[in-house]
Image (cartoon, rainbow over all chains, first blue to last red; front, side, top):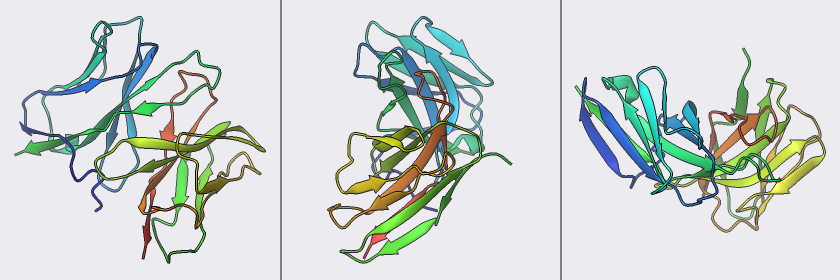
Length: 115
Length: 114
């Protein structure tokens, strides 16, 4: 399949370990953040989102942490599995903008799960 | 099954030719989007549409055109004016343009200019 990012930062993690993916966002007015997972040759899939009135949100095996002070977002994946191998993108949005739902995407991080 | 379909999956074009990428959704979403993805980079917005017969330029609209004649369809034309068209193109839709509306993505079309 195609590679969606030939020169992406890569996180290698042992199967069963926890993964932490980091993202620095640029717009201090952003108040909505999303993590997407993209497998090779496919479109991004929604993982989890968080609004700026929260610091932490948990889903199934995933947790997103938001630090607005330093404009930093992280995605934690518990007990990483081979199916978690993919490229992960963060996206930010200013929800109250008149132009609406225009996401700004980060550059992505490739996660490789070693058996 | 509800979802977004893009066709073709792979597309080859000679320099100087226009080419149209298809995007269809049966999610009854009002808003649709086109993004471009290059290796090592995130997604960049080309055009978006909030409603039929209306669309707005995104961050990299030069060399592209769109139409929105039907709610379920948002085709993208890559014109000869686009200087570096080889890329992975992704279509998305959302229920509306509200800032918290989740965007659902299609499987993408990989365009290669020969």
